[in-house]
Length: 521
Image 1 (cartoon, rainbow, N blue to C red):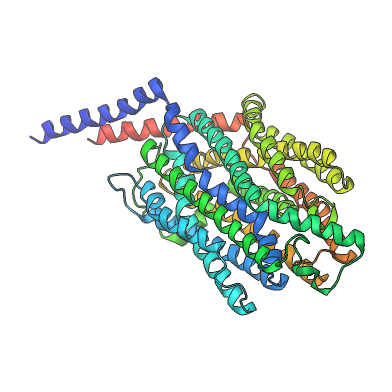
Image 2: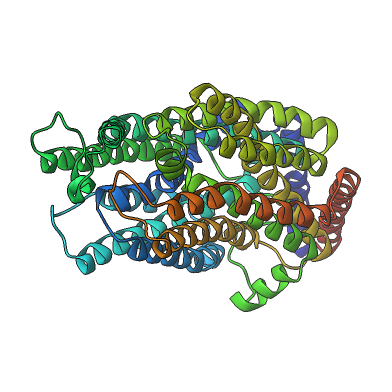
């Protein structure tokens, strides 16, 4: 009887071993699954970039919050986000597998709460709130939204390892994902930019008229358009426009989650069981932090991300107050994002031909001359537009390459530590942490610097120190940070030769584990 049971189990193991291999050779990752997976990444970029582009100018010029409070909200909000990411990653790793998977339940359950909290972030409950009340309101909802977004994005980003197929299939899925995320960034900016941009354009035109006529008074900070008889009514319309754009983006958030739920089923990955991890949190984090390729990749991504987000968070203020392009910044932003979206397939082809490490150096280096030209060209929409195309091309590499390199690092960890399984959510959560913390750091430092140099919220004309500070925050500081990031990427040890070696070793370990299991049975 025992021998018969052993034979039955052996047949089951052999069948289980052969089935994924045959399925992988036959189909890999189906195109429909890649597309549904890619669409699932859209809410993260839509909401994150809408906040990055518009939250500083919304709090400063629409809510009329002092820069000091804005800097605290943006920095501490991201600091809270940085704390929740690894905790969510560990919670996901500890959770068991359900009928619909291990990762997808987190995504589905967090979506309704994330949509509601995102809408509340852009809602102003009263026309005239005290400084403390306004701070508490926005800080609470931003922290709450960031928590629910972590519950969505950490398991979603980990899902890349559980789509099926091999490493090339995962790279292809990452390419689809980054293409859709760039489109989501474009779509979010288009929705929010076009809905609220008309109000910012009216204010810019009114300020230009007032500056030319030298009729500035102490009340200019509340004068939005001379054609309006009631500035308070115009300000209320601007706030309503922000709320409407949040409702539209929230609807897309929900629909994208629905597509992901319907079109993606979790698949087992090599040396992963999609089960609860058996190691304590601190032990798992210690193992991850000691993995050298992961450290080079994370810190390179961190400094590069801070560089891009520093320029991004100051783009609207730079165009409005330093470059004389306040009436056109939403159009320039769309041009930049369109160029980035269209560049993702190009960089995907380049990385397949030249390798990931070479491609990321090529792409990031383009951003430096772009920033230099943008700070030199003033008042020329054509010059800004052409340079924005160049900057968008570089931006696409930051979206695509680090996320395409991360699965290679995870596979390298599996080869070196085959007994530590199911740590993928912790790898991805720490990676997301660096991106979000970099954004909070760039926003916090920027608004705090503007506070020190005397930025006046809502004012038509800023003092020369504010203009100089915006120029420094938009170009020299990001260039220095980007150079540091590129230096760290230089020491990243996984090139194409090492990547192929990792895949060979990983297949040997998997095959050896299956053979040992058969012999034992």
